Image 1 (cartoon, rainbow, N blue to C red):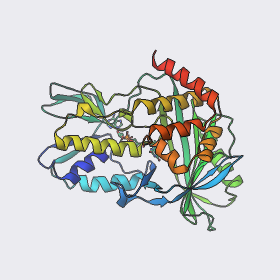
Image 2 (image 1 turned 120 degrees about the vertical axis):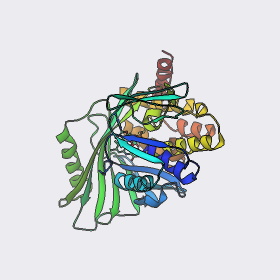
Image 3 (image 1 turned 180 degrees about the horizontal axis):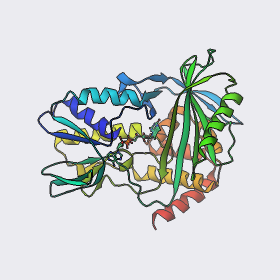
Image 4 (image 1 turned 30 degrees about the horizontal axis):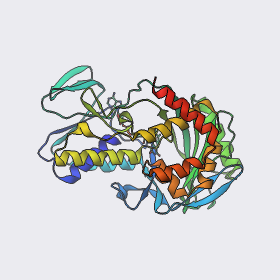
Length: 369
Ligand SMILES: Cc1cc2nc3c(=O)[nH]c(=O)nc-3n(C[C@H](O)[C@H](O)[C@H](O)COP(=O)(O)OP(=O)(O)OC[C@H]3O[C@@H](n4cnc5c(N)ncnc54)[C@H](O)[C@@H]3O)c2cc1C
């Protein structure tokens, strides 16, 4: 996603037609292997392939629920298959871009020469810039996995409201740790239903299916439906210290630390990074100056990660408090790392003081080790 987000911007700028570009990928991207959801104010770079969007979101917990207006944002979804098709249709029509399928091993850039191991063979490219989006986990002290299974279900009755997506539904048991479901309606009959956990360990495969069935029966009150598609995913939520450049190679996407440690959202952070890279390439500024996630947001993320990892407060309580005591659009701005310090102080002061203070001290101490 990150490599294609950058490449599409380079193509659209029209300024790289005289450069030779090599795109390496394991295998053709023909599967609808994921859906990307994110919120955005106005139109974005990939607007034409947004599959569905919702102006309102629902939040549910056992003690509080609300339909939240998220203006100026809308919650959007892009299907993986649409994204890959759209990008590769354009990429394949560019005479200066070659796509080669194979297994990339190590890669490095030194003194302008780039070396790549592809299918166990070493290749050298003089005067090349190299971008990597293959994530190899590094050292972390806290690691929570965001793991989820989703079904696209079709009901014989018009039970879904396509004007609203449910962002978090905490009316599911919390035996394993922070657990919620969400529902993204495509039309009155069809929706993507996901069962998601933020916990250190995965469940047995059958458990996700059982929990999905149970949620659909008890909360959506649906007995009869067809499962049209499935998705399963694991997103690492980690306090790992990412660098934008490793061995001279520019790190994109998750590999470059663009997955938000406390939420797993990546899509919009990647769009910002791609735009920044493009702007630097066009203006001749060095890529060594690429921005990192601001330190204060990493600190907030690590604090929440500490709480989720050690279960010092239930995630259900934290997220309910966040959305109950603050405007939804402010929370989303904060989660996008776009808030100002006064806005952050207001949000932070709405959360339970002591558990967060203790976690903040601990995560600060750990970051110095
Ligand atoms: C199922 C799923 C759903 C997600 N949903 C959301 C969402 O709703 N919103 C959101 O913001 N984020 C979401 N994420 C998180 C994140 O946005 C995605 O993981 C996103 O694809 C990350 O982009 P990337 O470019 O870093 O990695 P990828 O898109 O995974 O790209 C890495 C590419 O490298 C290729 N590759 C890997 N190893 C090799 C190798 N050795 N040689 C050659 N090629 C290789 C892979 O095939 C892949 O195409 C989701 C993740 C998953 C797994």
